[in-house]
Image (cartoon, rainbow, N blue to C red):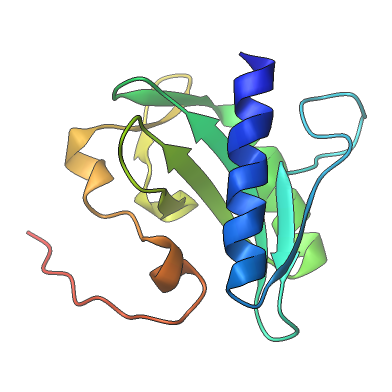
Length: 135
């Protein structure tokens, strides 16, 4: 599973570079340090992103509360937008701000109700603004 996660992280890094963002995989993502660190850090001099990358075969995706706290802490200190990047099979990347996630007893989740609210890569980097109608 780690190998597949790395492949998807690299795929996302390429997409970011292709769209004018410098991007790196965090060398210590996944918990090998005592400091909070997202999977990918990216920026273009105007906009900065701290991205926690997730892959799932299907929804829902559950995310541990501590992982979200760590992402928020890093993002606040770094001056970046905290984002969850989700890749489902045969679908484009979707990106979520923490406030879009559903709260659970032990953390957060992205389910079918929340999934359609996610941004695509162009909305994430500010190249496209999609009008959304919420209930």
